[in-house]
Image 1 (cartoon, rainbow, N blue to C red):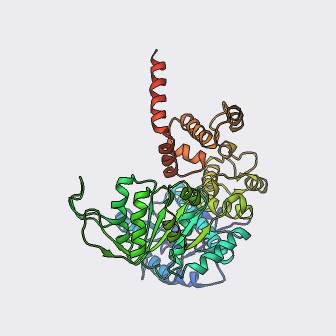
Image 2 (cartoon, rainbow, N blue to C red):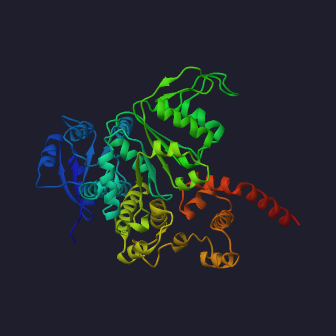
Length: 475
């Protein structure tokens, strides 16, 4: 059997070195030396690759802690585990704060030592994989941390790189979950304003009566609760970028004030009398049809053209299926590292299933699904057999499938809006009103779910339903 990992042991006690050789030889390839000078010579030898350093703290010449520091100075990222006698515990704890992976007390407990080594090697392996992944993605398919190689996304990359250096306002459109804020941040990060603030605000998440104050600030005493002057987000973003997410939900009265700000490049806080100059770039986003909203009188046409100097439409994930394996693999490696999972990967057949799925919630839904699949997988690989299809369908139990739901409601000739309302309400009740779980099943974020609840009046309905069910349970 070929042993995979090589460990460098450093201890001036020959008996400890011999013990390590005997105890760990069946599991790892070992090299043992007696001082830091020999250790650095070994680590600098490019013919041998060490995966872990196991060092005593008290050594002749430089100490084990000084060795760890010298390794960092030389750019060596090999994990270090230090061994210490009881009297040096405080020094070992201090060492961990400075970057040492772990410490083991002497006399050495072999099981504890092997467990610590195993953890260190696992973390090192994940970090190496992530580094390779990031380099590969950056080299081939990455623009400003956005992943994709399909023709649909490459055209967006091209537009992104051409307009980012300009000062033009941009309107980003696309379905929920396509990553509008990520693209907005990319525009900022690739612009001359990158060193200044990027300030996002969700226009649908803040009540209309408070949104003006959030955007433009207020003066002390301008309304109940205004105990002091407060800067608005436009001032917070001075020199940088303001991202107005879900601009389609902004009240028409506030739209007029925003238009004036864009025209004059000045703001006036709520309750204030003096205008203040601002220098910000505005990027707005929406999943709504703003031209339809203009026809219906819910959005100002003049504001639309102020915001939409350059339109950027993001493709739905089903329009860029070539990117699904890339994204799935990226999300898998990211969350395996984050959660410390031992799943090795996604099988080709499972990946085919992912590519075939429509992903109505787009990239956000795909990421949520991959997280669940990785956490729930009890085998080495996520296969087509153990894919949690419950998440793909949005179904939370076997009593009502999406097909049964649609069949039972299509016969009623409902509008799409009413159908959406009833489906969201069904999922809310099936999850026991757990918002995080409901949002994950629907493939949307919680802000979108809250907005939909308000839009459809589902909060009141759910409360009434809960009261009614409680009454029946007491009878």
